[in-house]
Image (cartoon, rainbow, N blue to C red; front, side, top):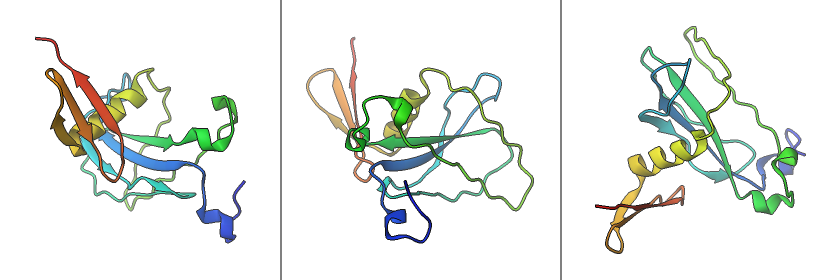
Length: 141
């Protein structure tokens, strides 16, 4: 549990990251082009700032290092609050995420910001230095 203005309010067992993507529609959302992302930090909160053109966007909240929480199932993981601030009127809708949303988000983040490394024949690895996620792509041709 975290308390505002306490020493522990800045500490979190999880690495947090917020990622903002364009999406084509809100009816059946798909992860589109990466717009902005926060730094991945072990803190009680993370944030990012972006000036957005009119259109549809998807904010994805990511958390890493769940094994440090001591919890075995996702039911006990800490909740989160996504706060959106704007000087203009915005329409916000919470959606039921497709099963592939987290994987698609990580893949798009790695492809957009990762350093490409050609490994063994047919394998490409993307490294993110500040986000530290690796994606291995095996190709068959």
